[in-house]
Image 1 (tube, rainbow, N blue to C red):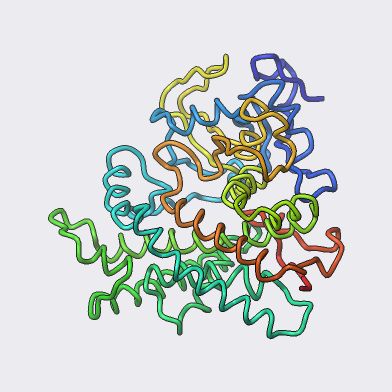
Image 2 (image 1 turned 180 degrees about the vertical axis):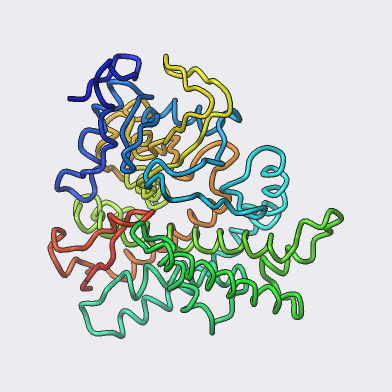
Length: 408
């Protein structure tokens, strides 16, 4: 029997309690036992899927504190969720996800020039066009249709591909490679092959842009002054692959899962149909409530850090539980409930601190356009199967639905 002390340490002679993963029969609820874990100790020892112990942060304040503290590094030796036999090959420059300190800040400033709020807002008409075109295709098809296949996946893929200037003829191949890389159960050799395929596609796109620049993000980066020689092919391939994969998969998950959530909550759906002005706030509520990064983020302490009454020693690994933080009652009353009228909370769905998602404004705009348009143009949208027959993405890095049969 596992026992935690009030400070989150483990009582002598016991193992740390297991990292919570079982959703208890409701696909939209966060893992059973999560609230008890957080209430007992917002930072505590836990046993992860790898069988190894580490620290688990589930409190909102504690998660934010860890994510903004430079004494925690993203360059972990291996994931607590994976076997110790899995060697972590961290990419070089270009992947903001695995960089610390000044190198990370310098590279992020470079990319931030292309992700300004103004530029993201200028993309809204193109996003609206893409959304309308895919709804037209759904309407032309014979219902029921799979909303994931016909809408949730191709819409964000087209948006991010347009932004990066990825040609139409390679988008399908890129998408299949990206999906393979997001599976938690992909064979290591298949994973490496998918990564190589994605990198080669991106490399070829970069060479096209060097020869024929356009009005896209890669061309914009290639046009920047680069006195230190940072913008190498390796840097650009790593950067573009990371952002393309993350942007298309996360937003696709949010569209599919968010739609399923609304259709399973008819009172909330009716509110949004009556008051489309609630859509921006509803998007924030979906981001908070669904928290699709189901494994959260991991860090390793580079020196001793005291937080929430415990000492995390240098070399200790920490997993921050994004769903736990977003459901912490400290940030909003009734946090365990889904409420489209809730005032936006300081959720951490996009992370926090220096590593928070650089594309979050694009994601927000895209989700706002998607849900406003779906509700307006498909007033009869409904599930074609009971929710307990929908296959959910439990085995993927980002939670969502594999398919969502709908009628309209």
